[in-house]
Image (tube, rainbow, N blue to C red):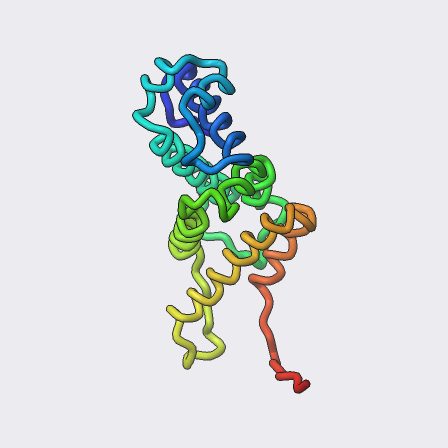
Length: 198
């Protein structure tokens, strides 16, 4: 996960400490976790921990930042090196973002849990919104009366909500199905909308 660390031994140590912290957070709140618990679970001593971090809070902050950076890399990997991709010609199986969420299932489910209380949902949503705003160009040529900024916000938050709901539903349905459906949803135009009366 932390591939931007130049020293592979440092990278491995940090990943192991991060994984130990997430494992503990599955059962306990951060305030009740001790540094010794983290180091014992990761098979290091306290000196190793303090070589890299001043506190468990700093470890958690870096864990989140590394996870979201990896999320960005997976998001961009299908079209890295390309200038423009039309989603109408895009192969849904090329989407790797959902694969990333499944690979890091323990991290996302733990950090999104209400007891973690580290604003992860907000941080994740903010990062996704920035990515979608930077990378996606929504066209609404059919109706120039629509405010493009509001339309983009509507679409982007819909995608974020879909992703969050999928994670919270234990990654069901499958990642392959979600890739396909996301592309279909992005392409879809609603010709009519009706309100049902009770």
